[in-house]
Length: 236
Length: 158
Image 1 (cartoon, chains in turn red, purple):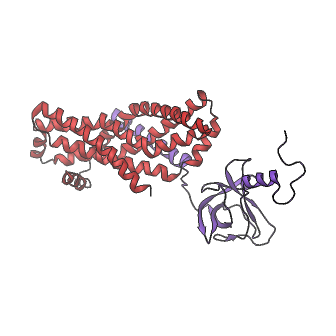
Image 2 (tube, rainbow over the protein chains, first blue to last red; image 1 turned 90 degrees about the vertical axis):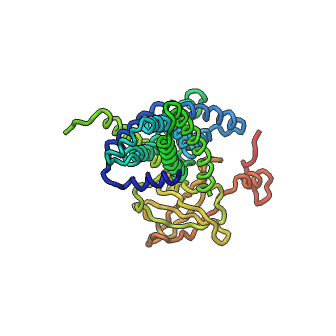
Image 3 (tube, rainbow over the protein chains, first blue to last red; image 1 turned 180 degrees about the horizontal axis):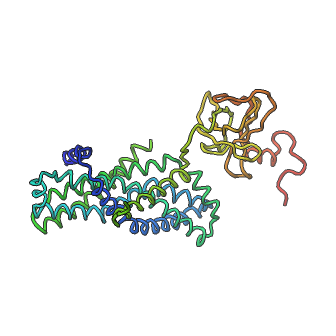
């Protein structure tokens, strides 16, 4: 499995570059996920604001809601939830596409045309994932904070200026960068598992379904475990 | 020349949008400084830093002219590194004190410029500092008069 990741990475700098294929993947993985990411971010922000408010109000520190929401989003929730959304939406599709090609021997046809299937299919998907995920994570964070801000100001009656100044003073670059590192790592993980399971598909239509569900389960578990590992390593 | 496909345009719009979100998050909320070097650093040693935190503002007459870069302990004194805007010159005998916005607000460093001819250069240390005022201590002193005579109108009025 790690051999496969190594092969993909070795093929990465090989010519010919196929920017159009990578661009198509960015469009599929990134642009296609924007709506679902924004929707889930909105509700995550709302829940965080509501939950944070009900806890913090007991201590009379309602104004810390902004810091709570922003810190939990940028550090933990945005990279993880964006990665899970991309896994469900794009990771499964990647495995299904490549798996179907493998089952119907289209990958062998590529080989006989002297086109390396890993270079042609896996590399653009890896590039697409690694480019898209940090951007999606940033969109997730901002949408969540914006939702929490609007909700806090209009429903909970918080002061908007105090909310934003609290956000600005409590969030540091290290909080943002840790989230971005995570999203880069998750991008590699998603592309890696999805393409690996795709190429390894056997057993016809049934096999494609099995490979797709394995991709989603394995990626989700790896993202959640990896989140813990990265947090533990980087937050020293 | 402009025969981009719909896919390319959508991908481009996504990347631009994502980079804008990333930039706003990093610079405005995360406080990343894109162009460093427009500030110079001076340090100040306080016997008590109070609630001062890194990234707190540094102010002269209420105007923010820099911020606290880092805080560390040196010889049991709190050493604060301050990044000051280059266009603000500070005389050598500037006094640094720790003030709070309002009674219980966030702490910041307040500078009172002196009248010396020479100015502080990059890496210099402000030699005159006043520690943070401990509000709890102050209330205790005023209420119970443990040290000195409290002002006539001090204390809690009904």
